[in-house]
Length: 240
Image (cartoon, one colour):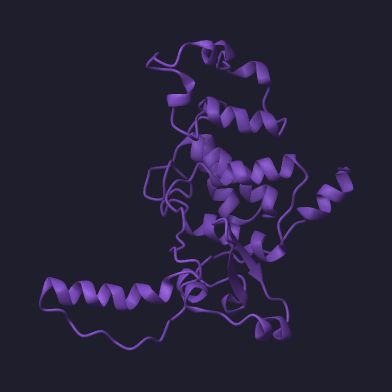
């Protein structure tokens, strides 16, 4: 993909200083659940599109909108509590019978999606970029503005370097207050060079870190017999 095309996909965005309020109209988001279990969000740009594809309880629940369901009576027995749970969760069941759910918490997966998409020449819609940025803003450390391994963790070089890179790719200006604060924290932590191998890998994908700067995993490990305790196929899925 040409540099101009890639720049258009990730053009700078005008980002509010705070992520307190939504950056998009949440009444226009729809969650498409395919038969294979794949979940994709779609943004209705026009009133006509919204009318043709009305929001359901699942769309509203996962975007934090009121469901306006009848109030449930306070349970006095375990059975009544179970019935209340059934009454509520039946509204969140997808058409194929399963319940959709987010994979929130870890703060080291988001940057991989962004960096990988950028390197592959794959873009996001403007609405997706805006809400992705808002998510990262709202999960920055409340004191130093960095990011850790998860949403409640202390700031680390790994989390701060990668999520800062993700924000910049998605369209946040380097002079945005969130970026300035995160960058200062990254410098205080010693800079991106202190990131572990996984972090350096993503930075190398972006060509901002030299491949010679970290130790690769020897591919010969895959030739070991399956009974070896540390065979790669037994590693955590994100690592292998």
